[in-house]
Length: 319
Image 1 (cartoon, rainbow, N blue to C red):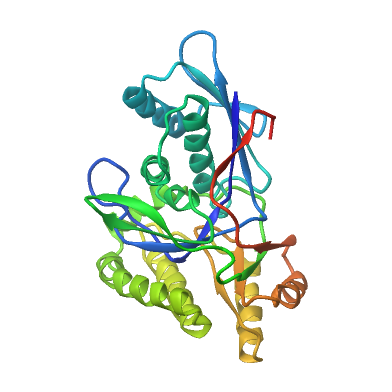
Image 2 (tube, rainbow, N blue to C red):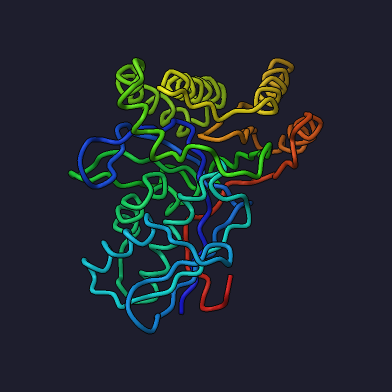
C-alpha cells in the first residue's frame, strides 16, 4: 500500500488539441507552474480477485479513462489487480487540472508500490498517456512539455525557489465543467476555423515565455500568457457547438486583474477549460490581489498558493 501526492499545474502557454493517432500526444508545446495549495492524494493497494477498482473522493467510480490507463501499465509491467483510492482537496473536473494531479499521482503511486524504478522523465511519459497535462505535474516549479528524443515528455525549467511567483485562485463554481477537455479538444480540432492558426502560433509563444521565465521577465510573461489564454478561449468559442466555460464571475475577475495591473500591481490572469480564474502575481503581492478578487460577486472563495513541488510519495498512510 503506497500513497503519492500530486499537485495540479496551471499552463501559462496553453495546450489544447492532440496529434492524430495513439499515445495522447499534444499538438503544441506548453509551459506551466505547479501549485502547492491544491493536492491530489492517491493510494494504491493489491486487490483480491480480478480487475482493478477505482474510488474517487470515497465513491466507487467506473472511470474508463483510469481503468484503461491501468490496463496499459499492466501490459508493460505485469502488474497485479489493484484498488486505487484517490481524492482531491479541491473541486474535481472543474477547470483546476484535477486530471493532471490525478494521473501524475497515480503513476507515482504505482511506481512506488511495485518498485518499478521509473525515472522522472519516464513517469512523465506515462502520466502524459493518461492526461497530457499530467506530464508537467511530475515536476515542481516551472515545467515544460515538448517533443524531445522522439518522445513528448515534460521537464523542469526552473525550480520553485528560483522565481517564487504566487497565485490567487478565484473559485467561481464547484461544478464539473459541462464538456470534458478531451472531448472539447477533439471537437475544436474537427470544427474550429481557428485551429490551424492556434497550432502554428503556439511554438512562438512557448519560446518567448520560456525565455521570459529564465530571465525573470514578469512583463513579457504576463503579456504572452494572457495572449495564449485568450487565444485558447477564442478557439473554444469558434468550435461547433461553441465551448463556453466562463461565467459572469470569470469575466468580472479578469476585469479586476486588468485594473490592478493598470494601477501598477504586478499580476496577470489565466483561465483554463473552466470558470476558475488564476491571478499570477509577483512575489509578495498575492494578498492584495486575493483581497480584490474576494469582493467580486460570484466568487465563492479565493485560494492563495505558492509554487509547489513535483509529485512524490508520502508513505503508506491514507492521504
